[in-house]
Amino acid sequence: MSKERVLLSLLPHSGFVQQVNYVRPTSWAGTRKQRAPHIEALRGNMFWKRADAFKLISVLPKNYRSISLRAIEIASDPVVLMDKHVVTDFSDQGNLTQKGIRVCINFEIRDGNVGILGFHDHPDEMWINENYQEFAKYCEQQGWLRIEGPAS
Image (tube, rainbow, N blue to C red; front, side, top):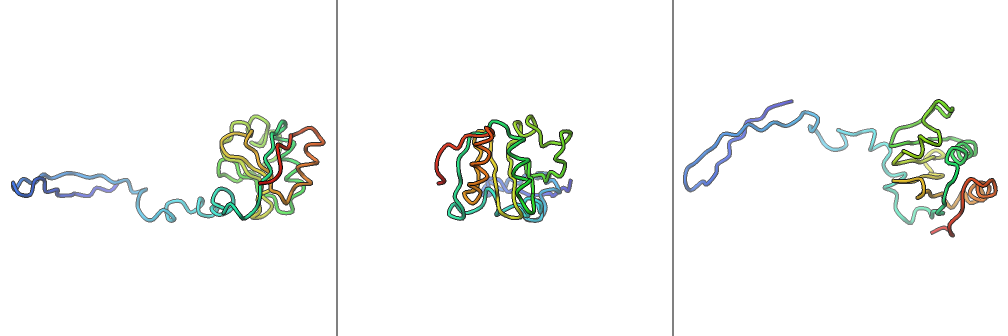
């Protein structure tokens, strides 16, 4: 931690001056982009994308793992993000399990830079990109999810 001494003049008309030690953590140094470059790398694809960029199909999932594995299977360049961390282990021992996805806050599967499916806060708020409507229908036929309405 770096220390900075700051002189504050309180009640300047009275001439009273108090010396205050102000401590600022060094992790606050720099701009926001310098502090969190990994967040900036992810920005623009999921939660910061303009609303008119693509439409989303609202779905109610039942089997998170099966839906996820199928999305990874159809993607040419799959990228799995769980709580803003890239997941590369898709086995039963990794984080991509029914329980692991259930306790996750932010989840997204992308094909390169294009989101296939994801949710924020809870899996019951899952969405599927409108461009992957056939994938959504396939998952519904398998009994893994229920499509709740048209893309919006």
